Length: 403
Image 1 (spheres, one colour):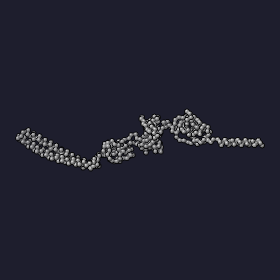
Image 2 (image 1 turned 45 degrees about the horizontal axis):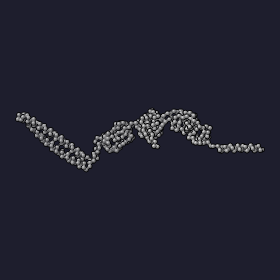
Image 3 (image 1 turned 90 degrees about the vertical axis):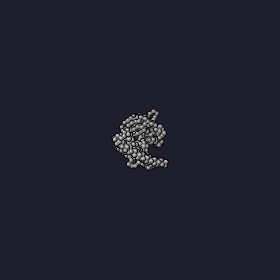
Image 4 (image 1 turned 180 degrees about the vertical axis):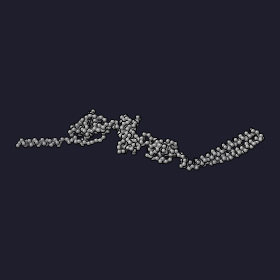
């Protein structure tokens, strides 16, 4: 009886110890994890860019004058050689009181000169008629040998000089008449009056068949020579300019594949690097950091119908593919951390976290290529915290990440 009682007490003691061990054992550390996967992997650099026209044409005023209203608007298409705007002569300048009075006096003076010229013409005409009559009479007398040849020649010269004087007087009348009309034009044309509609105008024509991208002037008014009026371009030649950091730009080559995203369409566009500019520039970032940037020009290779609504100066994000493969072992970069001089990850084995060194290859955004140390399908912990140590029990929340 005594022996049975001791055995029962021993069993109860063991049960209590086991129960206390279960109660006092640390609970598993909750962690998020993902599987090591194999699939498409691309190393790339990306940045924000904008669309631009490879060739733009600025149509300016060829001479100074008065611009008529420009009917074309941005987005309108024009044919090569089509008139894009018209110009005419400047309106008559305004006259102040002094200038107007001087103009009246100029008209009166021109009228007086015209009257004097007409009187001079009448005098010269009379003298010419008299000289002509005397010359005809001298011819008759010379034939009858009543006067000498010298006398006849003298009267002929007098007739010729009278004729020239009469012709000069007639031209003087014409000149003074033109002067009078000019003086009247200054006085009679109203201040600021434009030329009549039937006056000739200058038509400026389009150098290309394209689209109006900008309109610098729309309303009529005076313009100076060389002042820009319209900008034209062919939207079929649209390309993308991305200003990359210089240390990223040196890794690019002409012909590299580019994916154009977040431009407003449903699908990403395809493109290729057309040119990396040889000269960079400095730009201050939003954080106040000086950055050396290099313009990279991208040619859009997707069909024109896929980006028909894209225009000049639109925002685009360019992803430049440096290297890509369809079968690459990879894990999220957030699973990696440094342990001394090596890269390590926590692998979940039998419900416990085990520290394992790995060798990494290329990096691409949030994903990293694994060269050795892991196998496809193994579970690794993402964002391991301070509570995760080698051998600790973990409660895994398995998640799927996309790149």
